[in-house]
Length: 88
Image 1 (cartoon, rainbow, N blue to C red):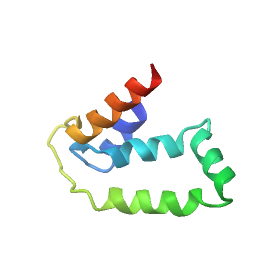
Image 2: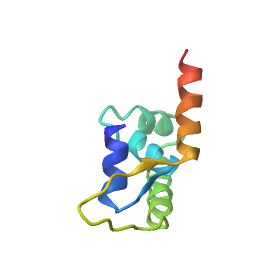
Image 3: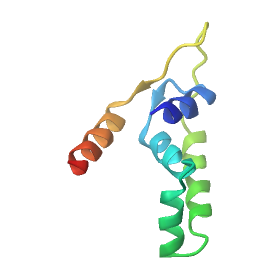
């Protein structure tokens, strides 16, 4: 969650969207997701990461005086709730 917030904040995004979550998963130091993608098809992770970056760049930037904090959009909360229920 920390890395998701950092990704959004570093790009001046007010909302944390599912694409931020996906980027954090792809950049995770354990590389679990990218390893799984490479198992499916070698070098597939790179084009996926490029598409994720393009999606993030399309999101609106909001500059808030004194910083500000990004909040989870309802779509992101649904993703996290679904992940938690599947993990049970």
